[in-house]
Length: 95
Image (cartoon, rainbow, N blue to C red; front, side):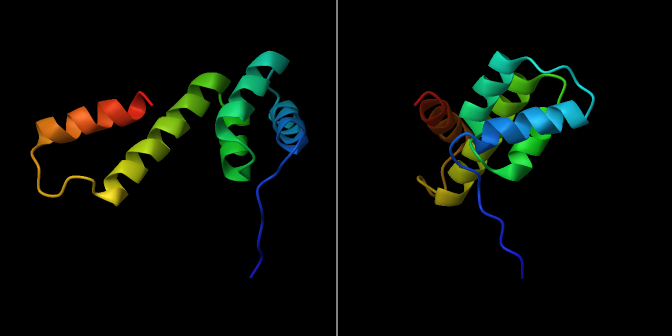
């Protein structure tokens, strides 16, 4: 089994810039820096973000997807109706 850990320090930014360049997309340093601050050093996320047309938009989408998944897993309020769950989602997303 091969274990790959998240990147840390300046490595995520350098990796995202390299992936972006290799994908043949223009690299706006500030946008890439903002996206890396959102997604961190997880290689799968860096790859998706760096190859995306809208770097920051993709990073925010991945963050929202992770939050929704986490919310669905923790089960704060069992057996409640959809309106209550919508309110919980909104309150957690606004943290």
